Image 1 (cartoon, rainbow over the protein chains, first blue to last red):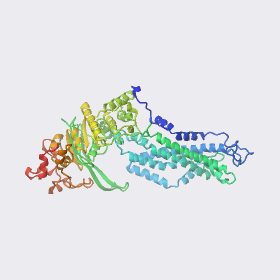
Image 2 (tube, rainbow over the protein chains, first blue to last red; image 1 turned 180 degrees about the vertical axis):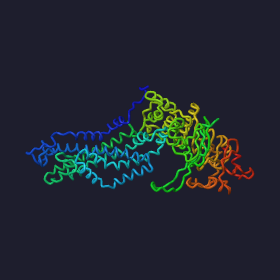
Image 3 (cartoon, rainbow over the protein chains, first blue to last red; image 1 turned 60 degrees about the vertical axis):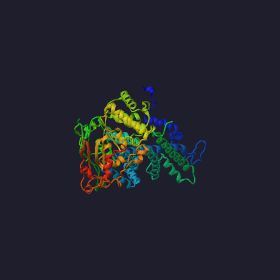
Image 4 (cartoon, chains in turn orange, green; image 1 turned 90 degrees about the vertical axis):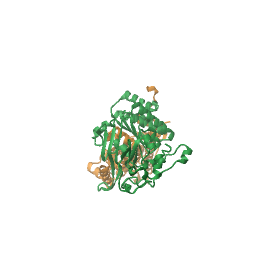
Length: 280
Length: 344
């Protein structure tokens, strides 16, 4: 019987096959991975080579303490990526859960849950993160969670809107007619159909969080020296850009490339996860 | 024979309100307002009426997809209208539904196999290999190639998608299938295929259908009896042949006279009775007979007194004051139609 069947696979394996055909997304994915390996120690100081121009030995030049900028950029990138991805994951879990439940239950529960979101919206979230960071100390893991915890609001609104529009579709009624419980309907029928907008929003959230981390680093609340993130490197570079222009050019070019790659990867993922985009 | 499904004075009202915390009731939509009918085992009851008359709400209330406001839904003598959720979940095995829109009724992110398997998994009727074989058997049954089990709904045409919906409804081997406009979204050529499939399945499994449509030609093709609904109420109910030959209610006559005849000569001769104006809002239904605002034969007391649904001929129920009049007092246009069953 089985050999008579068309070859078939799960949504995720299917998605992987489709993703592989999208070369821009693959190139972006490889770039994102590649950017996460590095040659020198991130805090290795070479006192003989302070503030050097880019050369064969130090491709991106060295900073005012004589540290290899390429290494620091690559290390910074890892931190930035880690912050971006972790915080986005945190916002994804909270946002999808909150929005999904609000949309599914509707009525008063939805009203109360969404007013709570509105109240959080009205708080200056950076202020909120700064308070968190000063109370709980400058812990980098905490930074991940704090940024994620203020980023879930829009995600929950998007998911709620999607669930509200989907829950009266006939395929959801069909699931109810079969006697599925609401929880199962949410997980099996509603949330998978919100994937498109959710992934798009995720790829917008990662860059935003990276930029916010840069801002926090600028205020001295983010990543602490001698560690580096793309944000802190850029803000350091900005202070001495008249004398050492490469100190701002390289980190910002890498930051821009990273954000660009993440957006392409996200586009590719969204298309790959949509079975309606035909496999040829 | 004891009816399989017996609706008694079913009412489904939707409150219209504004605001969430300070709720203000703006009004009530009486989508279904006192509907009673029974379906015998093996019978197909056609339910016709124009858009917005509440026929889909009746279907959704029977499956408890909306909660009935009042009345009883007797299933084998047990009232489903007030059955606890757990009891209702078990009963769902016997009652299934085919939906109108073959595009909206299938989850675009699930394969056909998963869609058809879902009812079986929910009731834990089969697992693993047996589950797959059962799904393939069902696909074969509704005329789909079982090889396509891994395909997604978008890879099928409208008619094939409706077959998937039928396979899903059949999976639990239900006794009653509520078909809510199952062919109205399909091309005419495909409609015939799906109708024939439904009738084959009825014969094969002894199914009972509640068949909802706005298309009289389709309903009379499949139904044993036909009920005509208007503004949440039953206007007329009778055997299909009887209602086609002897439509007693003016609304039924209006509906029948709107059906074109596939014979140019007869079509030119066809007399049309036309209802005036539009369907009134169910938010603010007319007093008296709900049809009086549009009825070509309206009488003064139609505007104040609602006619009861009463039996006139054998098993032929009509809700119309005209039935009380002696024959010679009937409006001439009305008698005309009654005497000439015309094209049917």
